[in-house]
Image (tube, rainbow, N blue to C red):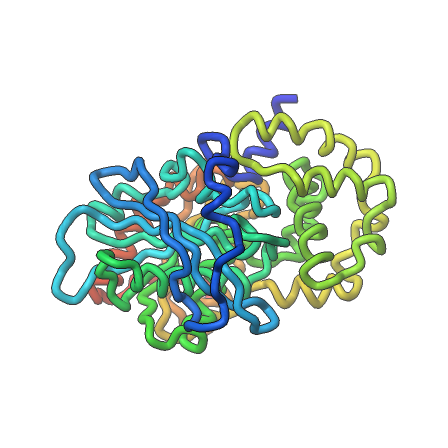
Length: 390
């Protein structure tokens, strides 16, 4: 039992308090949101969010972003503004991309009573005077389905959160930004890096920081399918993609497992109690789940996994990677291989190894180093690189 709980905790983010969705339901109601005009990043709704640390001001926001098919979509999130005076050129922005919290709209991090504990490095970022923009991603907060581990969707939402932060009255946010994410958020950060110049050319991305990012999705799912965390990850991915891409989930999941996958999809991962609540359905997946564990080689899943595996960052976009050596979800060798490919393509990569650290704590234990690395990028210092395999 204890090993099962630990495996789930490695896979899934903990938000420190239960969601407060009922109290905030009016704010998240899609009625009254005008998507007919405005550019991506346009603010549609703002609500003060109490409890920000260090005298900062925080706001729940809903802003316009872009669906996979190009149509406008509302996305929710949070913007935190430091209490210190803004510099003459405006405040730098850090876009925080969150790890897994669930796949249905009630699982948005911005709905949690204690949101601020989820943003690793928040205090250090505010102390340096940065505005922090934290998207929920599409389908979390606002009506779903959430495109879980869909890189383009995540990246657009992150970029539009920076635009929204710049439009927030009083934020005084400039055009310089960095992106910082963990796990699912690490994948989002990497896709943000690949999309930024084309999708948001008015913004200046100074660097991408990612802790234990989901990079090679096919090996990730295949390697972890025999673990409790891996079965949860695969179940959420198949559930989401069957709705986002109309991929045939019944072709790869047994009939007996479909209700279990639906049950897991309806539960958020916000508290330790939620991890315990997932034990029974997760155990059911041990008895019956996939028709074939080689589903990743079958179409359309094979092409979808490749499409959502991040590629090379553009030239001139430096990369910080943090990876725990004890991570059993995102395997250290996978992150090393991803870094090596970036290095061989001439990218500047700083790979920070975290001895004996598992998946859950990769962002927590690398946050200080990541914030310091981003600070140097904002200051215009040459990016360091400990590349291997050039």
